[in-house]
Length: 262
Image 1 (cartoon, rainbow, N blue to C red):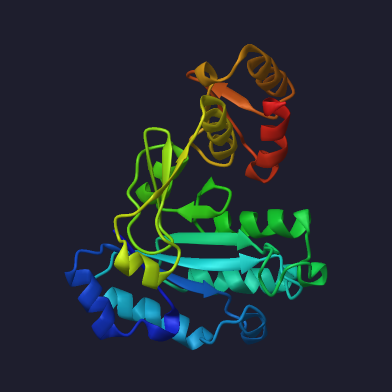
Image 2 (cartoon, rainbow, N blue to C red; image 1 turned 120 degrees about the vertical axis):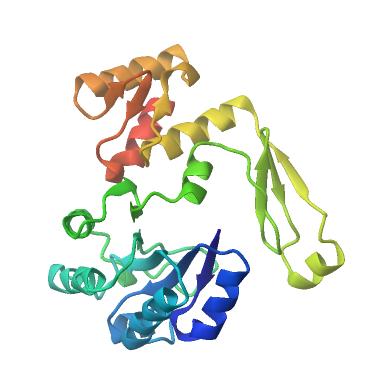
């Protein structure tokens, strides 16, 4: 059971409380150890508060601790990314989620191309340094102790969504709760349904499987898709083992998935 928290609000008393509620994993939205980058990302905590939050988590009894980082911003260079990883190495954490900056629509970053380096070289460098620090990559953005929660999504397992904005999934149907707290408080059991077709489920399996260690089951591909996947195996872009196709380079996952899907 994972609880998420901002480093500046994760005091020891609160962490002990959520631990007593049954949480056994805590995730902190650190994003960066650099003050200028934190300000750019709209975060109000400091490097010192990140270190204190991790210290408090250990004091509260948490054994599984995750940090979120963001890279590929306009501030990032190899030197600065290496410093980010050096800070990670000095913290006793078990998991890291490292995300390349995305310029989402309907956000302050929308269309601001200058905010992002968009550098494959920097992305490869960041991933290499994280793994050298002892965090093994098991998904394009996730490293370290494998999180069962995340793995369930990528394997297409059923899951329950509770709370405003939550999403659940069961037997090819995706369930969406009310997107405002007021609406959810008056209709907590209401869910909008999205029934997924077999082709949509297969598409998700391909995209999620290729960006993680889950892989893609050959039996779920049609003959044309299998032929394309086998062509990638011949060209050493994919691996095939025990009835599954695996991607050795998660940074190419979307391109490979689009090629297979056709």
